[in-house]
Each structure stands twice: as C-alpha cells, then as structure tokens.
Amino acid sequence: MNNTHNLFDRFDKLDTAINKWLVANSINVLRFSMGLVFVGFGVLKFFNGISPIQSLATRTTTVLTLGIFSGHTAMIFVAGLECVIGLCFLTGMLLRVGVWLLALQMIGAMSPLLLYPAELFPGPVHAPTLEAQYIIKDIILIAAGMVIASTWTGARIVARPQSLRSTLTKRVPGVYREVASARI
Image (cartoon, rainbow, N blue to C red; front, side):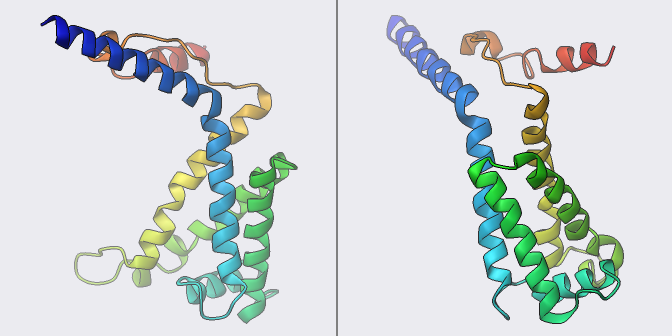
C-alpha cells in the first residue's frame, strides 16, 4: 500500500510540474500552432490543383466578394489572407490585426455551410462530405482565436496547484464558478 501511495505522490508531483509548464507556455504554443496551420494551408492555395478545398473556396470567395475575386485570383486572395494571418500568429507581431483577419476569414470559411448545404450534406442521411468536415473543424480555430484574443486585455492562465487526488471528483476546478461570478 505504501508503494502505491508513494508512486501516486510522485505522479502527482509530475502532473503538477506539467501543469505549471502548460500554464506558462500553452497560449504561445497555441498561437504558434495556429500560425503553422494558416501558413501551411495558405501556401497550398497558391498552387492550382493542390488544395483539396480549391473548388469550394474559389466559388465561395467569388460569391462573397461579389465577383471581385474569381477563379485563381480568388484562391490567391484566400492564400494571401491565410498566410498573413499565419505570419501574425507565428511572429506575434500585429497579432490583434491577425485575429481580426482570422474573424473575417472564418466568416468566409464557414459560409459554404449556408451557401452550399445540399452539396456539403448530400444523400438520404445528410452525412457531411470531406469538404464539410474540413469546414466544421474550423470551429476549433475560432475558439483558439478567441483564447488568444482574450490575452489583449490581460487575461492569463493562472496556476493554482492542486493535488491530482483532490481534483478527481471535480469537473474543472474553479472554472464554472469564476465564469458565473465574472458576469455579475
């Protein structure tokens, strides 16, 4: 029993150390990861026939820009926008501009769900196509952008170390209570 208790205590110390590292670094890791994703997917769009979402993105951009950008020019526009967003996130420079551009880009990226629902959810059971799944996953990018944007006004993750054992029966310690009291 004593060995199990000692092993659990050692794991608890490791868990606490990892949590402290996450508190100190997770926002920057999130920001940098988003930058890589945007630059990576943006660069694909510069080359005709490489991006798996090229046709849908081109048609959507043409509709949303009222024909100002169409064909390969629409893809160049989207590619450039995504690369600028990615560079803002990678470097941390002009990050506020990058997040605002992300918000605009996400409106465009999510709009095919409204513009082309029959194409994205075909068949008798309306299962999402690969393109629809590609679009739906952008919900995560929106949430990540919101987390990064919250740091402008000083929001920070704060470490409040608790033992693993004390948190096993709790949902997410303090989060629900603090959110509710912040609204008052």
